[in-house]
Image (cartoon, rainbow, N blue to C red):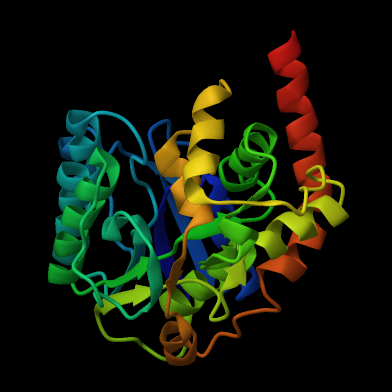
Length: 313
């Protein structure tokens, strides 16, 4: 029996990987992308124009909702993450969609450190418009019966935030941040995509609820930086350890786009217990994000070189 998956955010970093993972699950899965421009195999609709979503889920069996606004002012984030998301979820319910997977973020917890917390082991305390509105969007997803996923840092080919941010931070703060011992929850985009595809189309239906979606084993930021240096993606980081105050002072003294808050995301512990969702979905968590970095290193090298050339032009 052919199943139709309505996929929002299909052309993005995560969406492209999910589309590939769904294809790998077999020819009995048809992917229908939600797109502002339409096109073959797509339905034309826009989350910022809720009326355009009417009928978008007709004939779909599964909704995988990945699209979100991850930066910007409150009004722009609200339009996508609350209003548009709510409208899409109502359409899915009206059309009788039987499974919904909704992507959120562990950024809803706000400032760290966070050490091995379970879902809502601390009260969410988002600090940005994007994370506040994504947390609100979770409520609509849960009301619609969705499985809600909260990843933290996502790496892999196509990542234009995590490793590029590290490249800038290492240049501006060339030391071991607080010893480089902070543990972080990472997941490679292909492993996350396999999890999402399994939740959407696997034999086991997982009950509605919120789950962390990282590799079960956290990694230390020092190991991440050393791995990237060993692969030729980033320069080697000196072994000298700087305490947090010195790191912040150095960051402020060097011009750049990364903020103190963004340094905190990497330099202080942010790890979230994530083993349960892999078990429930029956999906292997993969070899781990450090291993996967070797596979995505050529993409990172090319991307960072291109970004540097553009900056110099």
